Image (cartoon, rainbow, N blue to C red; front, side, top):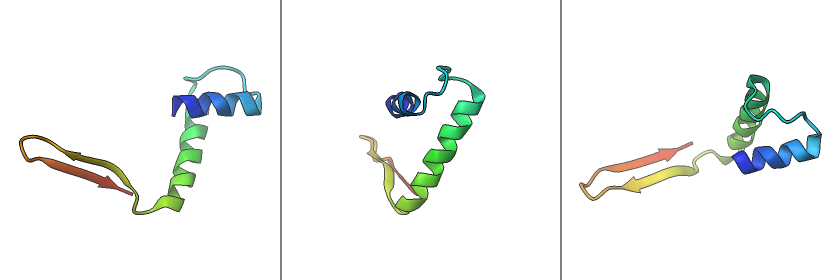
Length: 58
């Protein structure tokens, strides 16, 4: 995400402040809007040695 944010800054000529609240809010809104197109995608699929399984889907 950090790499994507830096590429976005280069294209839009936004002042460099990667941790400003406004920039983070804008990036999160764009990410959330884009993720709406990928419902059902698996974000995390982990199986530990003790048998614990975790799966996170949109």
